[in-house]
Image (cartoon, rainbow, N blue to C red; front, side, top):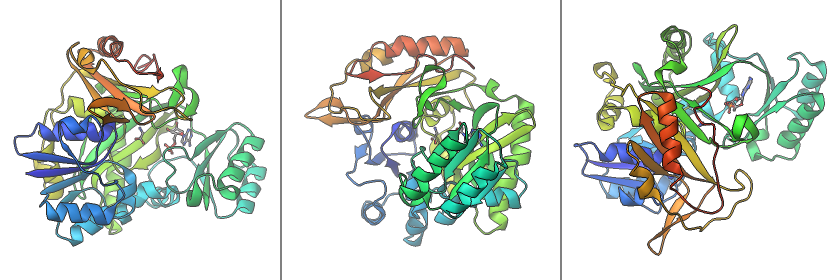
Length: 422
Ligand code: AMP
Ligand code: GLY
């Protein structure tokens, strides 16, 4: 089989790595890929949102199966387009991808299907938002969210009325997130522990993955601005089996069934961002694809042939698959360019990846890297995701930090507390 992976981050390197291990696969392509996928797949210079180019490529090269990493091509309708050309692709249609593409669609959907989530007010205009903030119905802190895609940055937790007004001003008047700020959501601020719960779904059946947790803030102890994710870990203990059952029964089941009933069958990976509050488990957000960096520690524990799972999603036979997971704990620590999520330099030489992997039970997934005259250099904010596993979480954490000491590029920043509060 020839498999095409779309995207260029750590998640896509992990996908290409796992897919490349399948005996069913002769060749893996990655569009556009990165410096890491270049060594295990054929990188194709097509952007992840170049839908016509990707379709042409898949037809010309007779690609047997395509897997989509990031949300943008899904929201733009890549699955609909590939299917209309008779191409096999795993992921939700544009209609189903609205669960991530529009936070307001997601909220209305949860209301229709009694999926527990934070109370909210939808604001269609600046005046409406200001009025709702002034009335203070949802209290403070208040969460302000841009409706559309904003690369994980469209959420502000406003401590008081002034911060809330300024967030709305930025989103709706200054349009710092572009069209995503045409409408905003004001949401009750939930308190508790967060967890990421991902499932494979074929539209009718679904299979939960092992739970994981990411670390979104740039600095230790969850300080500083939000990023795409500075690290993640996966252990069975993140959610007890009762909690997992609650998530499946009260959240995932009603979501997959609700989408099917409304004629928008959800096929692919559904990612539910959860808050474990004192009044039960509630949904913070849906994503319609694997998380990045959650994909790295989760796929690191998957023992099945991923291609068989993807084929079962495509063929709607997921009920015949049993997922098998390594009981080990896994941790991924992101090595970022100093300055990220603000400005940072690129083109800096990277050393020590082989030494890091020589520690054992370690794989270094690339994100913002590229090859320049045969030399690996930095090309993005999140550069590498050093991923390790071990029998328990403290051992996995110790191993990952032992490995990442071997890696060098300038200026490098990473969190020193990934997986330490688990
Ligand atoms: P989202 O993109 O909706 O997941 O939001 C990003 C992050 O903002 C989440 O991972 C939470 O840490 C935080 N967040 C979002 N919504 C809420 C909420 N209603 N209450 C508290 N924190 C939230
Ligand atoms: N790690 C969060 C995300 O992928 O959206």
